[in-house]
Length: 542
Image 1 (spheres, rainbow, N blue to C red):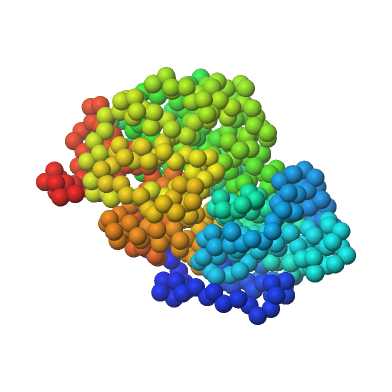
Image 2: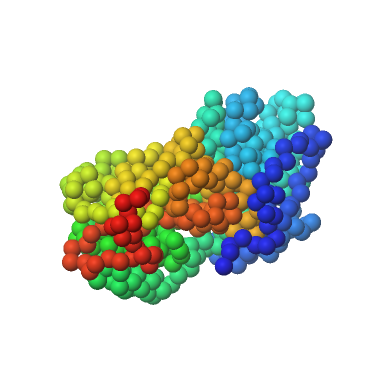
């Protein structure tokens, strides 16, 4: 069944980008909420669960957004507090010279042609209010100095456009002053939170995390059933029954991955890869029903929410008495852990500096966070010849790799995933240089925007990534787009279906699962998707 609603225009229609500028000045051009291009509001029950302000049921299409009576004072005081707390925000408000270097770097501007999706102008939505309330020039000269009053229309503009930014930080790579518009978006969203203007696809996962430990709201017994089902299926494919310990006290390593890995497709095939790998190397590890989620939607909500959600992973590591944490294929978990952990909840001095129990490698980069990425761990195993691999089992795949924004651009995790892929797959092709590594294009649906009501904007935002995939699809016959982020695995399939039919989406450890030769396994005839492996005579032409 297609994930693309019939109401969405056809690709040949959506691909025609209207670059015509509005006739009126941007300050005088009110926002128009368009179906398919905005996110629904958060439900009051989930806001109440999290003790967020002004819980009520409302819709962005309503004329009255049911704001608190003193909403302008709340926003003003909230901005004042954040200007004093976050020096970066004060600097970013003052130093932009509007050079426009970022303008054509945002995937939403490229895909929509809407000037307010240029990072410089999106930031100006907040900066103009800052000038009016916090600068002398703005107070005296008003609009001449680029200042404007905070009105309900401005607030609606904030909601529309700051929830059209995926916080991917591509624009920051090209800013000569180093302005990070993603941080501006994060703080603008915090201001919206103060008056109860949240979106559903960030608040419900946060509430579910508090309620059950994961975004999907899966209960502990459901989590255990999912893992057990995967163990059964892996046995059917390989003939090997693996052990998957849950809540095991005293294990050496706590493994945490996004909940989608044990529930959704194609994430699930990555889970099979984890289970096979851990069994083969005899890893002493455990899953946790309490920390059954690697993602942290607090990053898309507020700094306070980041802290609240991040804490559970470390609390569980302490309770179980593990030495360190291994993390699965997740995107923003890595940005949260490595950029915010130490000042929010860390340092995690009760854990040990991670050392691989198989190779003895000391992961010095994780000395502070005590958390290692699965591609670092697996690439180290391969480099030390600890795995028997048969990459020909992936000969039916012609792969390319999507650098997920957070582990790649934010943390520089470029080489490890590529090293693993090249060792488990014979056919790997890079997309153009200006679309990968630190210049990677976003999937178009991160930061809580991967909901169905926002589908048209998702497809527009994903157009630059899709164009790069189409390039290697047509040039090299690429038929699978690999990635290591749960949001990517959820949102890239409809993007490919729409823009580049014939390209599947998969995780790196899915291909590891296929290539890994397990000790004592039965003859493998299919990959972990159940697709038949290519016979030897068929692979000679590859």
